[in-house]
Image 1: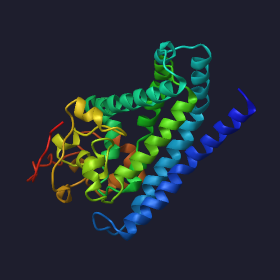
Image 2 (image 1 turned 90 degrees about the vertical axis):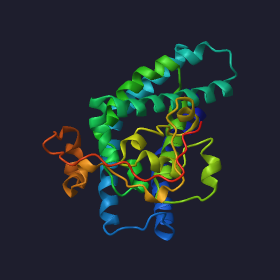
Image 3 (image 1 turned 120 degrees about the vertical axis):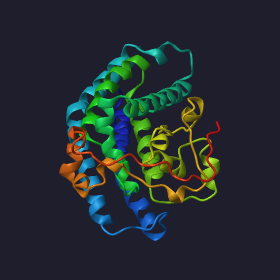
Length: 287
């Protein structure tokens, strides 16, 4: 690898870690000035808990999987291994094809997290947030992160993606997840953009506590996957959506310790009934 390439890659890694901070500050300010839903008391404490979880996740997964991810990606490219290495595409076309395949995997992975009970135990920590805002984008259980990082080590040689593609896609995911979790509205632009990417209104549906809506809109960056797989769902009035999970409404599940215990909660701890079907205005399942 040339020195200039190494420096560029180091710069890309630096931007990868700076990006969440920039987005958190920017979107938090937007939420403060012009929120979609009125900001409730305890907003700062809620954010501190979510961000603390995110920092711990970044340190642990980085220490356990950072070097191995780079090693596997470099080995994959050096040995021309994987699906993309057998295509005749130009380098630029192959680069973007890799990003699209990674995004398809994220759709599949997200959907599996909702339909495989063991995975849902970890993923439900993310959905238990009843105050959806930009910090919700950082709220994931360390167990989910580790399973995802482990599977990615298998996915890299299967697809034949490089570390450049991985980091570039991660930056796209960070940008989009912070954007569509934020407590903001982009007005009529949401209707147009959601044909291409996941938007705030589209993802609000996914965080509804009514299960048919929770089990929809799994896409992370490109919204086309939901349309192709018939998991797209919208409603005209998103202001009436109630976020969270009834089973984890108690404040004890919103503490850092409570969030970490979420996967291990049993039925005796979760006695709340499932949310009733809401009155929906202008439901749209069109593809």
